Length: 490
Image (tube, rainbow, N blue to C red):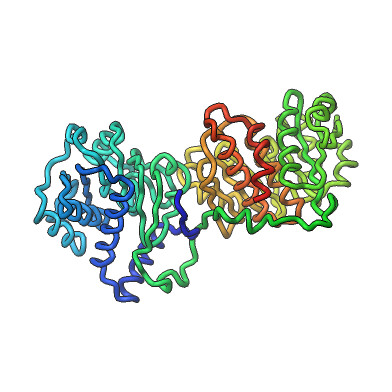
């Protein structure tokens, strides 16, 4: 994506920002609408210079008004414009009615027909705005399906129609845009969940509203800025030694799952932990030492065998390959209430869901299925509102929660961060183990839990993006590990 501000807002907050611009700073609503339409039109011209035949789909409200502004500008520029109104223009009011009247003085509207798309170079989607709160149905749903079935690129004004701008969930059906120009404030739903398949490139324009409009309006969430790694990971002091960077202990790897702790351990070491140990089944010790001799590996048959490695560790990574048998349960219970900060993932989270506890010094890293178990819910509810889910986990269990997926969310129950880096190649076994090790490794180096989680998520995603240069399909966690050293030395 292009450079974006990091502040995100709910649709309700953006409407309040819009109101402040109009009422407190004297910017007429028609001026803001004209600026939005003109901004989107200019962006369309830059990104799609060869497009000359446009189909503009307009709904009601201000989103439709933005579409009418674009249709008029296109007609004024000599473009062929087919304007399809999905709400009676006569029923519009205020600024949207004015914009519609100006466009319809130049363009005769027509009924939408899927066949008309065959002659369009580009579709402008101004059907539904940020206020959508129920599934799309009827003629609009049919039109969205028809547009999505064709290769014609789509420019979605402010938000792709059908995408919930607060949650990032598709409301039945949603437009798949190539470009989404958005205004006044970035909507949080454009950056997580289903949004990844809908928004294309997001471009922001504040429409020249004064900075004071955003004063006293705390963002609902923030994007992780791309430059965050450079700021947090400067060159190390020349006098540094391994004792300065902490000791991570990875606990897990039941029979047949030794690879999970190897990946987590190597990730912790690769992100800069001074020492990394692994406590796992004795049968895995030789293989782990052979594959990664820098790891210190201890075989544990029972929870009592953890005493020595626990005494040396600064941070625990609990869960990779832990399993759901008695061995895993015993190890989980042995460390759950201890005094070491920890990162909990995989079967560690499954055991936690069965035996809930609360701590302020841990990081929990569930995918939606694990999140559903933690909240005694189901995956559909988690995906319905990922922001609410990650906040609920952090508030119920304490510490920091990381809800993995497209647009990973990180929350301490108060502040929420969103990572837009990463790719679908990360949907493969072992990726979560690598993230667990990374967060533990940063925690061992002295970062607080929220910062360590943010760094781990961003490093994980960026390394995966580098590893996916040759293709996303077939990307393995081991490929990501090979990229880590370059990413953590920005």
